[in-house]
Length: 388
Image 1: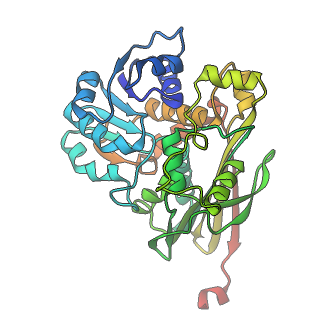
Image 2: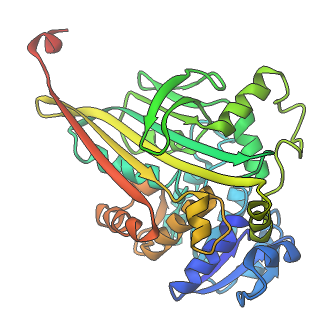
Image 3: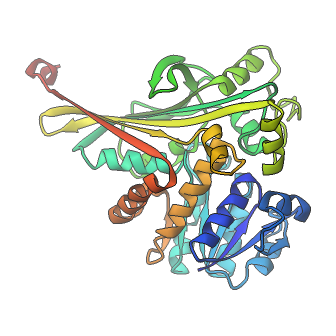
């Protein structure tokens, strides 16, 4: 396919390389050409054009002739880029939602009829978390007659002297100041920022960690395609602990704005490698767990999936200087492109694409150095429980 990747930061640049290896004809677009080339690397032959994600017509001109437009820029630009994809009549894919127009529903879903009319597909929130997490929720739900609750637990940690952005600084700040969205008793609600603290055991080498409510995108898509009563997303690790401490100290608020020392710009691969050599950055980890509870015939059933992604140390051994989150998101996005549902028309989050496509993506995951384990627990429903 001819693919235009908008946004050439840590994730977008690595995704462009992965798509090139898959045999696609890739062009990148970014507002800052020098920065884009630093992320792509000196030896990269992938063409880069200057384009501002705020300018729809600029995107249309830059991406004209593309068969797929991948939005790897900040989610705040989603609607602009969606309109550009419709203008040039191409397929669309992005990595996250902004959830500002409607805090409980991904803004991309508003474009469903327009993509149907153009006979094109838009695959949204197609990264690791969200993205892979949505696929695992759908897989667990397929094993049940009915779903009661969906609980996603993430772990993000960085062993470093100073704060280091594993993701875009703007996205990290936006998530940190946003209220968590949850579903309770079948209704959307706001949760307390950094609230509902609990202990959750991740697989080794992470182990037990405190997790708290976080503003994640899965709550804005999953309940629209899966009937459930409860859903929340919680995050643990030293990064969320630091944010929670700043919040309690009154240092983290929308009115204070983004402070560069707390939310530094995403480091380029060369900068990451330099920090590792100097000992300023020792390691980083990222993990995701998906727990779905429900019933199957006369049994209560709980399905748990654990996804362990390569650590920073393991990624560095492969000759790459990427954070675990960028590595995981880029690889999952590349798999979504590899199995892109080009025959569909409309807007689809990962859990709503055809079963065979979801299975093909998850089957390919292991080849990307991502390990997924499964645990299924069944419990007989007692008669007194049914009476209650």
